[in-house]
Structure formats: C-alpha cells, structure tokens
Image (cartoon, rainbow, N blue to C red; front, side, top):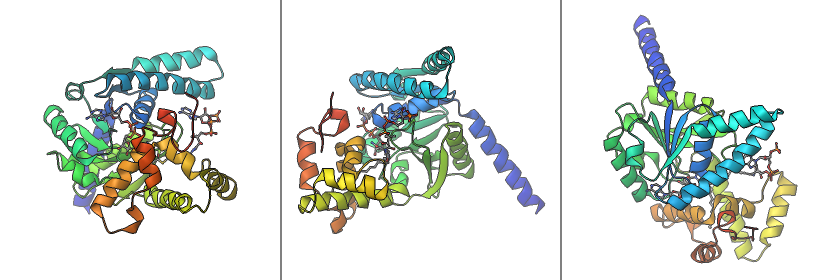
Length: 309
Ligand SMILES: CCCCCCCCCCCCCC(=O)CC(=O)SCCNC(=O)CCNC(=O)[C@H](O)C(C)(C)COP(=O)(O)OP(=O)(O)OC[C@H]1O[C@@H](n2cnc3c(N)ncnc32)[C@H](O)[C@@H]1OP(=O)(O)O
Ligand SMILES: NC(=O)C1=CN([C@@H]2O[C@H](COP(=O)(O)OP(=O)(O)OC[C@H]3O[C@@H](n4cnc5c(N)ncnc54)[C@H](O)[C@@H]3O)[C@@H](O)[C@H]2O)C=CC1
C-alpha cells in the first residue's frame, strides 16, 4: 500500500509538473480548427505560435481570430476598456509562422490541426520529433484517423495523444482526450489539465474510430446524404426537420457546410480505404461533385448552400 501511494504520489507530481509546464503551445494548421485552438490557447494565457505552410491561410486565420475574439470579449466584459485589454493581451501572446520545424524548439505542447491525411500528418510529426525538446507532448486534432498510426512516425509514443476539439472552438465546450496504449499517465493527466485551463469539459476516449462524438455524428450525416440522394427529401427540409423536430442547432447539411465538405470527404475516403466493403462508407456523388468544383461549404462561399462572402 505504501509503495502504491508512493507511486501514485510520484505520478501525480510528475503530471502536475508536466501540466504546470504547458505554457508554450504550437498549433500546426491555421484553418478552421487550428485558428480556433490557437485563439483559445492565447485567450487562456498561453504563449502560442500558429503555423501553416500557406501564408494566405495564416492571414485569413488572423482575420477570423480578430472577429471571433471581439465576439468573445463582448460577451465576457460589460466594460469596453476591460474587453480591449483582454483582446490586446491575448493577441500579444499569439505569433505566426510558416515554418513548423523551427516553431517547436521551445514548445511544451504541439497540437496538430492540418489536413485529414495520414501520410501528411505522419511526415509532419516525424520532422517535429527530431526538432522538439524531449518533454514536448504531441497531440493530433484528427477527426477520424487512428492516433496510434499517427504516433508511429515518432519516438515519443508515451508523450503522444489525441486532443479533439469541436467547431467553433471558441464556443464548443467539449474536448475529447484520446490515449493510445503507450500514452503515459503523466502525459494523459497533463492533456486533461491543459484542456481544463482552456475552459473545456474533457471526456476520456480510447483510440477507436470516431472516438465518441464522430462515431455517432458521422453515420447520421451519411444517412442524411443518402436520403437526399434517393430523392426522399431536400437538404433544406432535412435541416428544418432536424432543427425543429430534434432540437439540433444546425441541420446535417448546414453542419457539413460548416465543417467543410472537403474535410468530410477526407474522412469518408479514409474510412472507405480502411474498410472497403462497408456500405456505410460508400462515397457520395453529391459530395464528390461539390468538392471537385471547389464548393467546400461556408469557408469557400458555397457548398450544399450558398453563402455571402
Ligand atoms: C456519404 C458522404 C457523406 C459526406 C459527409 C460526411 C461529413 C462528415 C463530417 C465529419 C465532421 C467531423 C467534425 C469533427 O471532428 C467534430 C466537430 O467539430 S462536429 C461539429 C460540432 N459543432 C456543431 O455541432 C455546431 C452546431 N452549431 C451551433 O452550435 C451553433 O449553430 C453555432 C454556435 C455555431 C452558431 O450559433 P447561432 O445561434 O446559429 O449563431 P450566432 O452567430 O448567434 O452565435 C451564437 C453564439 O455563439 C457565438 N459565436 C458563434 N460563433 C463564434 C465564433 N466563431 N467565435 C466566437 N463566438 C462565436 C456568438 O457570438 C453567439 O453568442 P451570444 O452570446 O449568443 O451572442
Ligand atoms: N472542420 C471541423 O469541423 C473539424 C476538423 N477537425 C480536424 O482538424 C484538422 C483540420 O481541419 P480544418 O481546420 O477543418 O481544416 P482546414 O482545411 O480548414 O485547415 C487545414 C490547414 O492545414 C494547412 N496545412 C496542410 N498541410 C500542412 C502542413 N504540412 N503543415 C502546416 N500546415 C498545413 C492548410 O494549409 C490549411 O490551412 C483535420 O484533421 C480535421 O479532421 C477536427 C474537429 C472539427
């Protein structure tokens, strides 16, 4: 018992030390998710570097963060001076880069939110593994890829896990914290503690397909697409039905446009490749056509629906 207590004390103090150490955060990818994660990390007192290979994407992200943080500050502070102080301090903690490797050399935590492609993510993490300090924790925000497969690119599986945020990150309260068998207890505890400093409610997930939310949400979206492809209902009527009949804030087609049809297609194609005989993952002509035309949803101005730019 004394030995167990000693071990528990040691592992608690190790994880306390690790979570206390998460001050410098690097977020790779400045798209919908990366920008949101970087914003919330800066708002909650972390020094943040947001990285993207595409300089234009960084500029768009800065604009999106500027708009979003004003909405957050307006809600949080009645007093305009306090709101401005909050905004300028948070933005002062946020810097940007187009060079991932040089951005992790002083990082305590790297959160990856780049394109949903296993090979691209593995290539990135292999490069980062060689450049980041020993203590740095690596996490992926993947929606659908196995964390264990991504971690194979590194020599730090004990300091690797999944941190799956939800869109829009400044609003959605949930964070799925995913552990692989190799994730150390100290790393897992540090990820949970960091999630709480980000103001999120954390849930524990094993590295199973879709974790918790997407395991239930994605089949629902597939069913909605099939229903429209069969001609049983229009996207507008499905959306209205699910909002007014089931109380969802957005219907499935509005949500697909919000998430990004390109990201949705990456997810479906990845699952179809892993399980080609599963009829659930059969690709959708509607989604394939829209993606091939560059109609990704809200972010490109058109998807299932049209949006004002
Ligand atoms: C067979 C082939 C099929 C192919 C398709 C397959 C698709 C597969 C897709 C897989 C997806 C996987 C994605 C994933 O991994 C996980 C996800 O993230 S799932 C998405 C989760 N998100 C949701 O479900 C969002 C649902 N929507 C909402 O909650 C609301 O609609 C939303 C909050 C987005 C907007 O609310 P609304 O009332 O409509 O608008 P308002 O503008 O009034 O906002 C309300 C409130 O929130 C504040 N706010 C909104 N956005 C932001 C922001 N970006 N930043 C800061 N604040 C924001 C706003 O200020 C309002 O605050 P008030 O205080 O109420 O004024
Ligand atoms: N869109 C959503 O609602 C959600 C998406 N996710 C996941 O988050 C990740 C990112 O998704 P989004 O932000 O929606 O995508 P996005 O398409 O908006 O942004 C991805 C960004 O990554 C950049 N990028 C690509 N390769 C890169 C590399 N090697 N190095 C640096 N930057 C690179 C791109 O230039 C782009 O700006 C994906 O894994 C996705 O599955 C998770 C939760 C919700």
